[in-house]
Length: 287
Image 1: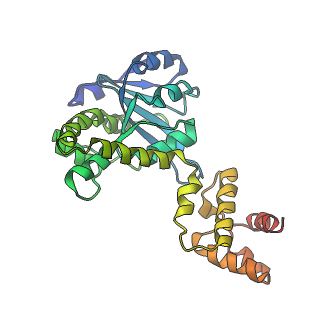
Image 2: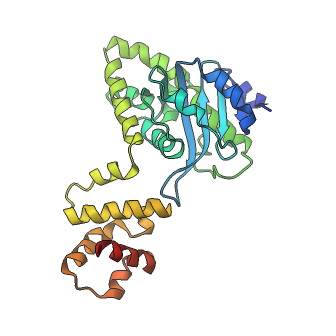
Image 3: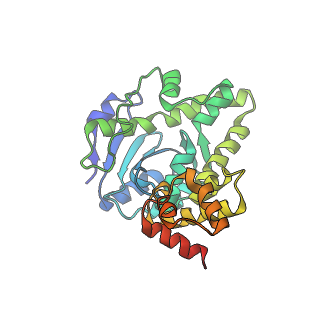
C-alpha cells in the first residue's frame, strides 16, 4: 500500500504530499499521477564506488502537486517510466543533468529527450560559477537544506527518516525554481539557449560511459586509445571500476611495453590489479 510520509510533507515549504513507493503493486498509482504531467522534477540516489555501472537506489520524481520516492531495489518493474520520461512533450527538470541521465540510461535504459537543468540556467542568468543545489534553493526560496545525507549509504534498507527528507527535498523545489528562472530567462531571451545546453548534458548521459571518457584522451596515441577501450569493455563485463583493472597512470607504460614487445613479465603483471586481468589483456593483444 502507498505510504504517505506525513512528517516529511508537513515540513515542506511547498507542502507537497510525499509517497514512498516500495512495491510494484503501487505502480498504477505512480502511472496515474505521471501520465498527464508535462513538467516533472527528477533526481536519483545511487552508489557508484565499486562498480562500472552506477547502482540506482532511489528515484525521486516531483510534479506540481506531489513527490514520489520510488525504491528501485524493491520495485523491479519500472519499464513504464521509459514511455513517460522519454516523451519529448514532457520537460524533465534536473540539477546537474548529466549524472542523473547517466544513471537513468545505464539502469533503466531511459534516454531523456527534453531536459532543463537549473544549474545551467543559473549559470546563464548570473554569468557566474556553477552553483550547487542548496545555494540555488536558498536564493529562490530562502530555505537552508540539510545536506548531511549526501554521502550516506543509499543501498542500506530501511531508509532513515533523514534520508527520506533529504531525498524528497532534492526534488521538492525543482519545478518552483524552473518557473522563477523561466521568467528571467525570457527577459534576456535565454530560454532556447538553456534548453539546448541542458539537452547537450542529457545527451552525454545517454551515451555509453566510455565515450565521454575517451574524449578526454586528447594526446593519447592510437594504441593507448585501443587499450583504454579494451579496459572499458572489460570493466563493464566484470562490472568493476576501470581503475580496478589498472590505474590511468599506467596506460602509457602498458602501451610502450606493447610496442617494445620485450618486457619483464613480473613487472608488467604488477601494473594490473591481478594476474588474470593481465593475462586476459595479453590474449586480447595477441588476437
